[in-house]
Amino acid sequence: MNRIVALMCAGFLLVASTRASDTIRICTYNILKFSQSNEDGRIPQFKKILDSIRPQVMLNQEVVDNTAGPRFVSEVLTWAPFASIPFVDGPDTESLLFYDQTYFDLVHTRVIPTELRNILEVTLALRPHDATLADTIVFYSVHLKASDGSAEAAQRLREVTTMISTMTTRPNVLICGDFNIYSPNEQAYTALTGAGALRRFVDPLGNSWRRNDAEFSKIYTQCTRKSNVAGCGGGVDGGVDDRFDVILASQQLSSRVLSSTYTSFGNDGLPRLNESIDEPPNTIVSAEMAAALKCASDHLPSFVDVVLGDIQASVEDHKGVQLVATWDAPYLGVEGLEIGDVYHVYSSSGSLIASMVASSNSKRITLSTLASGVYTVTGPRASVRFVVVR
Image (cartoon, rainbow, N blue to C red; front, side, top):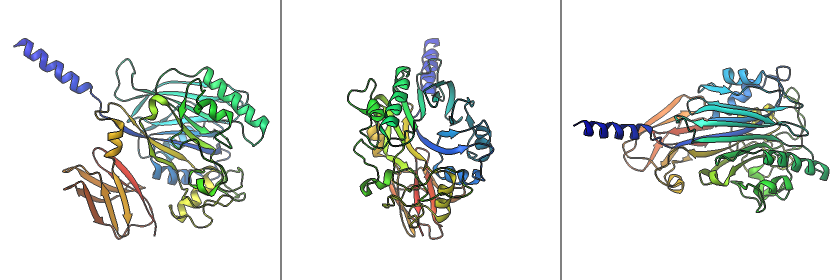
């Protein structure tokens, strides 16, 4: 009898320690010299933007002082219990990382000095975790030397080389930030993604893109303004023609990256090149959202979803059963439903729009009153966003 009880308890402990997989949204965003003296009324704009993206981890570049942490936690990232890592002041602008405490515990932070700016390293552990911290993910936030020139490119390589020389050996690593690279042939990029890299990383968008080319317009993140915009934090102009903001995954983690979710938020793919994000009118976000993106920063935020935790099926299987939402006014079509599960539609502000019980693997509902914007379909196993344009 005692043996039966012991076996039952062991079985319970095994089940209790098993962790379902989580799909985590990672966002990188250069927030343009953000400080108390250079806020320029941009907090409401950042809130509008990030309320639509809703990442679980956000890495920021161009943080000037220690006000960004408490301001973003209390006024921007308000839909979840976010925390900021401590701000470490350095020789130039700095990086900062925010994480949703529902999903992560902070394990370790450090800065890696380079000849211009510090590179930030942050280790997070997916909750719940055991004492071995087996399910950790290490983030690097980089802001490499700016400007197009051979001397600047050489400095970017030196900065990346410094990071590589002291990089973690943990398997799950993401390098995010403002790389300021002008080509995938740049040595700072190939030192991480090329065949000869000491530790090779994977670009979810591939390595054959080009700048200032209509074919690749959809992936550009800089610059949101054709010309300078007064009262919007300063920054540079020039129009949307560069892919400076990049997310790279270690080879061990790359199979868990859902590359189809990689998004330059607010980029509708029109070949704007040297035009602003709202010229001509943006076709994927509202005029209000485009205006917020244009003023909040001279960069667009980029994000991608990553599957972390225990995965019973393969990640490829996980991709195959992902929710897919299609908007065809006035109908919302959703595929990949689990029969019997309850699904909800929320606005970007968190308002409940509709609920439904899945009687089949796909469903079509009428939502004739939806205004332009970004919405989310959520269920017990997955969520997906869709955009309404009126």
